[in-house]
Length: 191
Ligand code: SF4
Ligand code: SF4
Image (cartoon, rainbow, N blue to C red):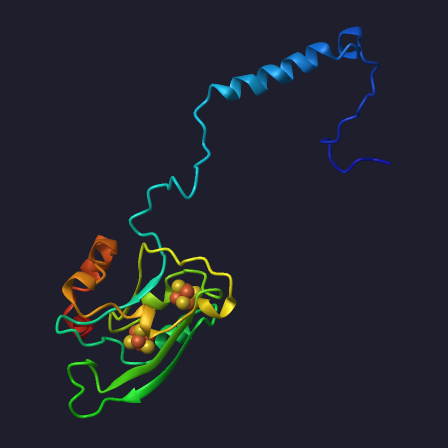
């Protein structure tokens, strides 16, 4: 049959030479390659005793932030849940009552806020979608567990502590471009 291109090659099954038939040179050459790896720097990391340095923008376990006065920033708008491609976020909104101003920054807040860490793909879309700077991904790792239900993280795990030493600093994780963007007057309510 006439070939459509001239790229095909005719393969010839030629007889092996004596040098090839005794196999020893090929075995010796293979051993040399193996031996050469003994003296190379090992790329294997002995985890968990050793860990690699994390990227400054590593996306790990989420944090739900509080404002400077200690009130929860999340207003249960649901934008993070809508943006989540893995449908990992669920929440129940509630109305703030009189006297709860110190607990919740806005009139609406998340009475329940859950992230299923087994569904999460740590894409960061929830962080990008949040208009209140309430949710961030951090460099903390999600702990391994043996039961699936332990991977549903609620507010008890996600919301940062009120005390200054329990706050999670996310300022260094934002790129200069993001910080520049947030300087715009029209986004002041986000801070
Ligand atoms: S990081 Fe991505 S997958 Fe995980 S909860 Fe946020 S939006 Fe969903
Ligand atoms: S974390 Fe942000 S986007 Fe998600 S419900 Fe709260 S305020 Fe809205």
